[in-house]
Image 1 (tube, rainbow, N blue to C red):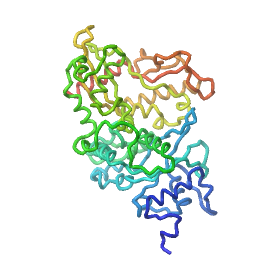
Image 2 (cartoon, rainbow, N blue to C red; image 1 turned 30 degrees about the horizontal axis):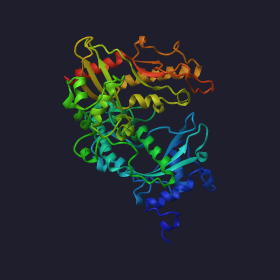
Image 3 (cartoon, rainbow, N blue to C red; image 1 turned 180 degrees about the vertical axis):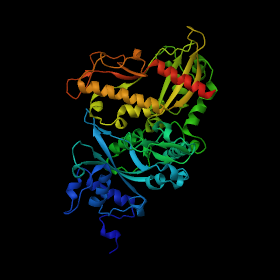
Image 4 (tube, helix red, strand yellow; image 1 turned 90 degrees about the vertical axis):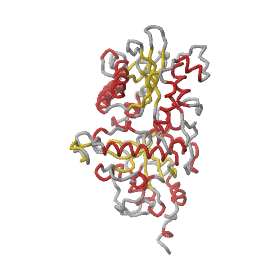
Amino acid sequence: MSATNKLPYDKTNPISIFDYSKGLIGRTLRDFLQKGYTPKKGKGGLGQMVENIYFLLETNSIPDADFSQAGLELKCTPLKKSSNNEYLIKERLVCNMINYCEDVDIDFDHSHFYLKCRLMLLLFYLHQSGIGNLDLNFIFSVLWKLPEKDLLIIRHDYDVIINKIKNGEAHLLSEGDTLYLGACRKGQKGDSLMKQPYSEQGAPRRAFSLKMAYMRTILNFVQKCGQSAVSNVRIAADQLVQKEALKSSSFEDIILGRFKPFILKSFEKIASVLNINLCNNPKNKFAIVANAIASSGYCSNVNRSEEFLKAGLTMKTIRVQANGIIKEAMSFENIDYIEVAECEEWYDSRLYELFSSRFMFVIYKEQHRGENDYVLDDVFFWTMPQQDLEWAETYWKHIKDCVEAGNISELYWWKGSDKKKFHVRPKAQKASDLAPTVDGRGAKKYCYWFNNDYVREIVEQHKKESE
């Protein structure tokens, strides 16, 4: 009998391996534990235990995919439950460590990421504090082949990361630099820095990872498909850009190109050219026009398009008065008090995901003070600088301290007048609406905000860099 037949699946066949993986769903590794096996600890140990205990494979140090004969990588990734008892992605999917000195000379087609992760068996399990690896419950299994269109975007993301290393800027890498494939931080603050090839400056340890927003679309897919979840399909959302276009241009260049014919044209003129009816003067009329340009007829809401959803990308419109003042602060989503209380690490927080994601800013500028004669002035993609992300971490820790102490009130939050870049206040909602809290009593809904002076700083900084 061949070695292949000794296993309860064909280790050369991804479908056979995937079918076998379904037997783990709804169960724990303890159900399959054999006498004498020494459990491994930590998140890294979980994948190794799944290989040993369930798939009956011996651990090795070969850098190939885990099921090398099938070209299939095994990844275990945690879920958490929301206050509504829904499954949520807990963290990004770490794929492989970045070696600045070695990876800088490797193109995408020969990269460890591509060779190992183009086809993955993803096992989702429920994270529970205090529960050991043997007793974690596995929820979903999916055979995920990175779709060809996604690979075109990921290829560009990889090049962005590698080019930054080539420029001696590995220490300036940020997850917000890219769309689907991120360079996420690994280790703790204070860890020794890694050597990079083109700078004497040490750089924090980072890994190639699929972002939380991308993982969220995979989770949505598997929840809809159930255990027939074999992928390389599109998610159920409109596409902004066609696959063929991505073979010659980056996603961001394609979108920016759609705005170029309208730069310095009046808001009303653009609406007329695009046949947008604004006679009712809707409050979000500037966003409606920006959306029409960016979508180019491909979708109704760019923020709900396939590419924006997978990247966690957000389009925001900004109005600059003739005197350069930006009156309006920029709002984000409501604070999830339970998520804040239960999240142990800043890098795993929802706020970190929001603020470290990529943004597309559409700038309208008033030509004459008080005349409301806005023109499309600028459009650009933006990533929050590392020093601002560090300030955002202080913001998050303050919010967390307030939530844990039950101080959910204007008396405690950072205010716009504090000039700290960020603040907390409600959106225009019913004051009677309450959001869930850990103690079950609920609290008034508050929202994350950028200060208006911080938004002005972003716009002016981009202008300087563009000159």
